[in-house]
Length: 210
Image (cartoon, rainbow, N blue to C red):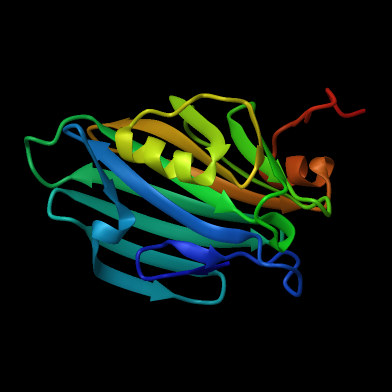
């Protein structure tokens, strides 16, 4: 997975010589009634190596520290630490959104929400999903990709559990005044493989795995 200067991405290859499964990955924070996207933040510090990347970003109101670590070929951990720079910043809500194009196609993915996890499967059976390993989401979104980005912008996620088409998925977390969110992004060749990568027992549309 390749990240840009503010930890967004449009490249996720799994396996490494396989298809690109990501159209767009972006985070945002919402406070005082407005959503502020990663693109609005300036880079204060950035360094990276083969398996780790680190950012310090600021938009003048809020500072976000990000650390990304690839633990194994199936899992990437993204840790966000968010805190205000001004006293008049109210409670902060953090959003992580993803427009997946699994197996390199746009219109034939199926997305789900289950056990605090959003995930999707493509036509060829590749599974990709993410969840927080340290915080319960206060909302989630499973829908068309365009509606998903609009929902984040408006601060109104749909809490749906299923969508088929050109999918977008998102999770929302209440940071309050400051806090950390650790996102596990996992990949698998089947649902069991994804469950292992994310360390959660996912059932899928057919019920619990045997």
